[in-house]
Amino acid sequence: MTETADKPSLNFIEQIIEKDLASGKWDGRVQTRFPPEPNGYLHIGHAKSICLNFGLAEKYNGSFNLRFDDTNPVKEEDEYVEAIENDIRWLGYDLDGKVLFASDYFEQFHEHAVTLIKKGCAYVCDLTSEETREYRGTLTSPGKDSPYRDRSVEENLELFEKMRSGAFPDGSKTLRAKIDMASPNLNMRDPVMYRILHAKHHRTGDKWCIYPMYDWAHGLEDSMEKVTHSICTLEFENHRPLYDWFLDQLGIFHSQQIEFARLNLGYTVMSKRKLLELVRDKHVRGWDDPRMPTLRGYQRRGYTPEAIRTFCERIGVAKMNSRIDIAVLENCIREDLNKRAPRVMCVLAPLKVVIENYPVGQTEELDAVNNPEDTAAGSRKIPFSRVLFIEKSDFLEDAPKKFFRLAPGREVRLRYAYFVTCTDVIKNDAGDVIELRCTYDPATRGGDSPDGRKVKGTIHWVSAEHAAEAEVRLYDRLFSEENPDKLPEGKPWLDTLSSTSLATLPSCKVESSWMQAANAADWTDGIQRVQFERTGYFCLDADSTKDKPVFNRTVTLRDTWAKVQKNNAQKKS
Ligand code: ATP
Ligand code: MG
Image 1 (cartoon, rainbow, N blue to C red):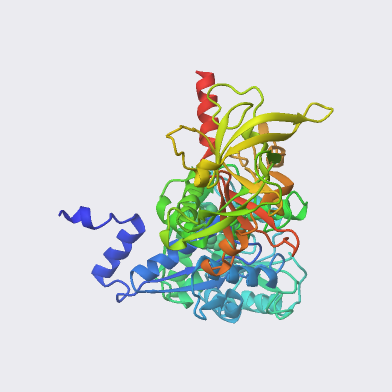
Image 2: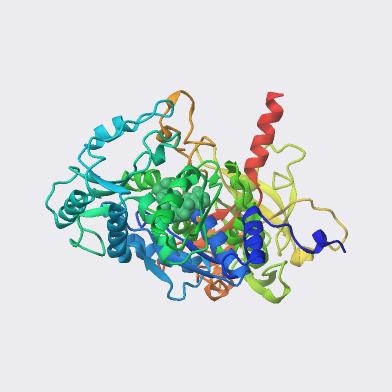
């Protein structure tokens, strides 16, 4: 066997790490972190970052920690802190007590700032934020020095101390790094390190009225935690010189920043600002709406943490931004659920069927396989009786030849039960079909043909008397455009919110043994998941009551969108 055949190729970050391990750069250590700002719930992009960082630490026998980057008091809340921790655990990662907060380092950040002032590398500036922007220049023109740039070290120390003690109003002064106003990299043009903000912080309360900016704080956080490989997304690539500059000026532990492409998914948005807007303005039911790309939404939708991890691994790490087709994620979900979800029959749009030659009042029990993919799952008994429900869409009055389901005079197999033939169609005054009359062939019990008679179609059904009533919610793409962030002619992103992303079916009929089949203990998160034969994978929603279960459709059995797109493409050509 060649070396490449038994050793999967390394992604570019693994290559960097293996080179570092070989050269002894970090004394053989690998330490990564996941640094969310607690200003929203985690989404699938975050999951990608968590899987990557945690996965690297695990693979190289290193360590990983969660660190809340809570340097902005205005948008951050404890609600998010708790939700983020829970979601990471749900994903399957044990935090093992390694939960850190940037706000615990405020005192040290302040000391480091004083060190830079003493070195002549930072100054207090009185320009307003608007003036600061003007002075910064543009990509094509250099910036201008601030008139406060040459304040003495003593004056800067004194002013900075006063900033901290609350002597100045919000926005009246900043502490800035003294780097180079002519730098081609705008981030290096004397960036702001501290701003004045009299705001209550979720953890430090009123202790501080100056708060560090992201670029100033982030490298210090990594350094203090002795993170070796500080992995972030591509938009921070041209912040890296600043990250390096701060750590070099201070001469402290210097983590290495490495950028990778963020995950973008089709037909959704991933910016926390936009997700918050969807929730706040009630375009969705909450952060855990099953249409949201948040981990809470996915959990409620019935996605499994195992499948999400497989997805994150499968898409790999890249250095170029791209958009991943949602079908890739859905396929991972299907693959996992196919192996693990017990099968149950549920009729989503019920049509009554009376088997005329079946004795009134009789019930018999038929054997049904719980999961053909898992022999250990065994079988169950399902009741059969004279009155049944089948799916409305499984009957057509004027059926074309290739319609292998029920039609007047045609025979079909009822899954695990009998062959039945439609003998009569009953309609209401409006002409809608409301009931079918059928006969069954007692010789076909179990769905086998005794005389080799061929029946092409097999449909699902439930016994009317024995079925439970259920509400079923079907979900579709939240947006009708693949990239809502980039619409032609500056169309606002909310304009492409799909009006058909949720369909509620209030009175579905489900085999009442579903409860026995859907054993919550079989799933790491205790959520009950099943496959409704022929209609998809479903999970039990928290809105369920004792009398009426509510199911969310997790995913269809096949990628129906691929078919739609293929048909459209064929029509066009
Ligand atoms: P937003 O820009 O919407 O506020 P963010 O990226 O700033 O989101 P953070 O809470 O700062 O959100 O993110 C925490 C970590 O998750 C960061 O290290 C960031 O690089 C990573 N991350 C965020 N979004 C994605 C994504 N779509 N793909 C991969 N990693 C991501
Ligand atoms: Mg951020």
